[in-house]
Image (tube, rainbow, N blue to C red; front, side, top):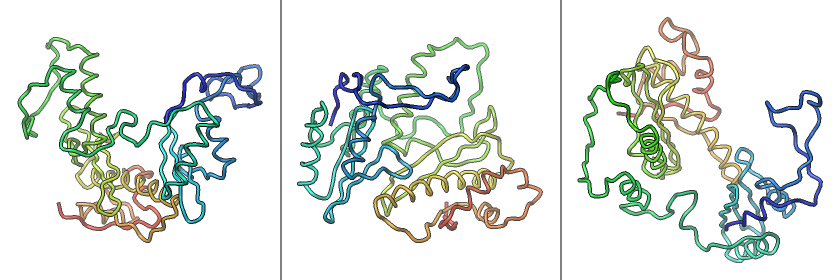
Length: 303
């Protein structure tokens, strides 16, 4: 479902007030509020959905749920794009008709594309082919291993500068692709980057047997050991698990204790032992709190 931009940016008749944005408060009137003249994204949608009996998600404020007669309707709003579905065809059809009458929008049919993602599983994706064509690699020979994992990359001070716009476009396209291709990301390691000696945290979260969330990013500081690198990665994963648990509660799902699998016995020992050690006392206290999530227990995973 897509909303017309003219409706989103139009003037509003209702009286709506908002707080001053942080960092842009008026020096003379810091405690005053602003009166809106034009509509903000999601403003009318959220008000309409809440009046219609929907409940806003506790952690995801773009999520709305409606339970009626044993059936559930789920609505997700991203700026001017709305996706929705439910357990009852009649409930879904009624919602689409009601929204079309209330707002200026068009129903696009079954979900196929959303926020640049192709909602269809297959051996090859549209976005991948588009990236290759964009950077003149459409006819390149595919390789199972693009480069050696042991190659050491150093900064070339005397090298010719590359086109920053094109280079960042390539990197950004690959990062966006990882949303549907987590296998091209990285796992956790210690001191993998030879330039700044920072480790990489790699985590993945499964709901049943389905991979629903994952991340791979460089850690903020250099780890002194593999144990510390694994420990920080586990804390990051625990934070995501707590967020997912709260989101799934909005859907009416309840869970017992959730296992967090870590391929490091020493990292698990550090997480379970609250006492400080000479080689672990420097670890950020926030990481220690993150590794002790409510309802989550750590277990060993064989590498």
